Length: 68
Image (cartoon, rainbow, N blue to C red; front, side, top):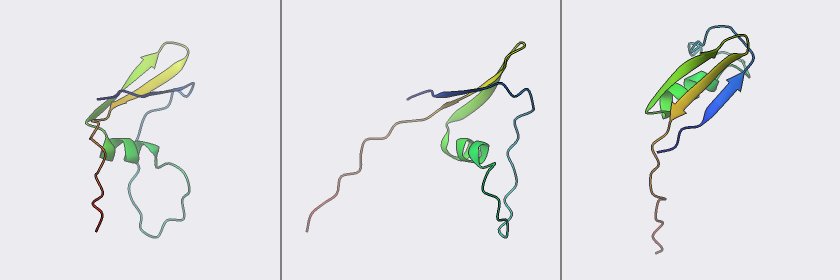
């Protein structure tokens, strides 16, 4: 398992945006990806300095490609 973190000076809330199939939105997908791929995730507020979003990813062995 690995536990990456992302630190931001932004004090806003962490939201998972809804999916709009017709959307041309090019940003705002980060937390949706984290939520769908991570075993768990959370937010740690840093007083006067933003927040850290952390998440745990379970590591899988590489896929073996069979020849033939």
